[in-house]
Image (cartoon, rainbow, N blue to C red):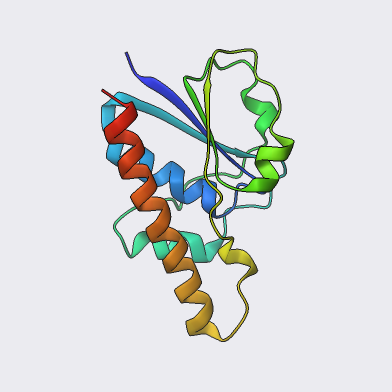
Length: 139
């Protein structure tokens, strides 16, 4: 039976979208992955580009609000920023909650190369986390 995973972030624009992409790619047929935010900011074009560089297409993802998924019985809910963790709503499920606070590349400052490096660094941290999560939790 597929495991249902929700990745939750503040705006569902960068970190949760990246994690959604990696969890779906790494977990394959063993998982159904959803991502949402406690707000919706639209999928960040730089997140789309940095994921494409690693072969993960999130260009068709949408920015969804967590309230849209209240009727899904998730197995896991992963918050990927402290703000979302603090505002994470209660789900009427037995979902196991996990948390990892990743840096927000959308808040990166500097020139184009510095901002790109911030997106790349966050992407790589999320990729590593997702690999470990799938290998340890999804059998």
